[in-house]
Length: 54
Image 1: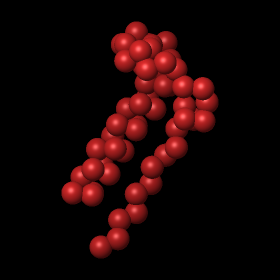
Image 2: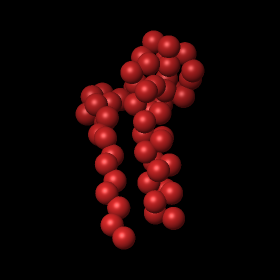
Image 3: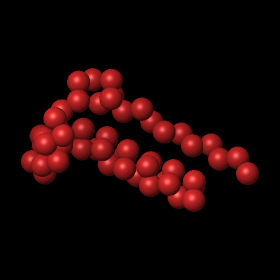
Image 4: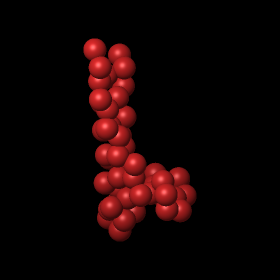
């Protein structure tokens, strides 16, 4: 079996990353919700990859 996994590289990794404390809090999700969206995409793609590997 051959799995083709496409993992989008978020611009957040290329740009300066916010402090983890800022990402951990809920408030920045309203302000920088582009960053919050990237985090959700990474989380989902991570879960998908974990399911494929197992």
